[in-house]
Structure formats: structure tokens, C-alpha cells
Amino acid sequence: MKNLVLVLSCAVLALAAVSCSMKVPAEATIKAGEEALGAVKAEAVKYIPEQYAAVEKILVDARAALEKGDYKEAIVIAKEVPQKANDLLAAIEARKAELPGVWAEMAKAVPKLIAGTKTAVAKAKGCDQATRDAASAGVKEMEENWKTAEAEFKSGNLADAVNLAGQITEKAAEIHGALAGKTAGK
Image (cartoon, rainbow, N blue to C red; front, side, top):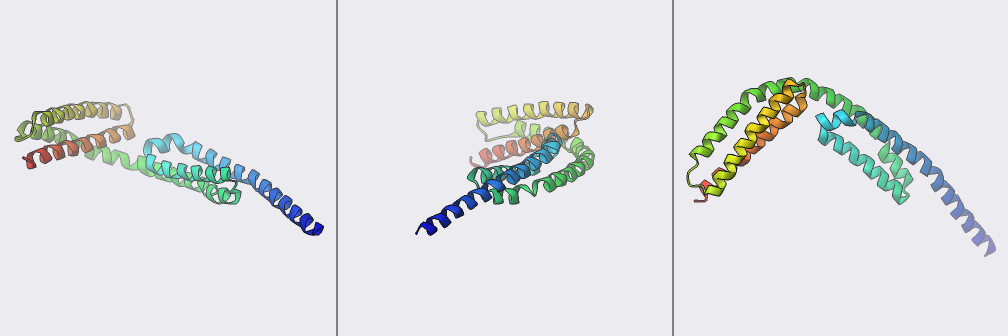
């Protein structure tokens, strides 16, 4: 019986030692991932925010495994982050390369979209006044955002300009949908 207790005690100590010995590598792996991701954060957030968030989530999962004491899992999860950070660099460069073409298309389309939306609001019949007022305010917001987008483009902030143009497109769809919904419901 004494031998069994001694064996079990040794097993518990050995398990504790193994667990502790895995903690340091897990912390180091997570730190390496954080440093790799930190190196690309500024541009990734600007050019490819969704992809950046997905890689950041991997680090969150690795930290959670570390906090639970699952050091092996933390290492498995976190060890892919540096490669994913390199993948983000490639995606950033690809996005930068495509932005001039995207802007050129938007620079042609968005002013027409704003004018068309403004016309649709003016011609909206069968809509209540609140809907027309909201649509008119939305058109003014679109016009202001377009001026800002053009200023961003002129100052070299192509990503911000394209993002604003995208928001204008979304706003136009929202306005047209609201007008169509109110007209169809009458």
C-alpha cells in the first residue's frame, strides 16, 4: 500500500513537472505569434481587416488553451500564427495592387449612384414623409462621404477612399430598399 501511494505521488509529481515544462514553450509560441501578428497589424487592419481578425482569433484561442492549462493545445494552435502573418503580408500586397483599379471603377460609378438615389428619393411616391426624410438625409450623408472619399484619394489614402465608397454603395442600397419597401407596402 505504501508503495502504491509512493508510486501515485511520483506520478502526480511527474505529471506536474511535465505540465510546467510545457507552459514555457506554450508561452513562447504564443509570444512569437503575437510578435509576428503585431508586425503586420497596422496595414492588415487597414487593408484586410476581416482576414486580420481571423488570425487574431487564433491567438485568442491559443491564449484560452494556455489559461486552461492545455499547453500542448496552445502550442498546436499558436504555432500556425507566424505563417498566417506572412500570408497576411501577401494579402496586403495583393489588396494594395488592386485598389487603384477598384477606385477607378468606383470613381465612375459612385457619383452616378448618388445622383440616381437622389432622383429616386425625389420621385418616391406612396412613401410616408418620415421615410422620405430619412432617405434625403441618407443622400446627404452619401454626398458628404463622397467628398471625404475624394479627399482621402487625393491625399493618398486609397484604402480609406475605397472603404468610404463601399459604404456609400451600401447606403444607396439601403435607401432604395426602404423606398421600395414603403412603396410596395402601400
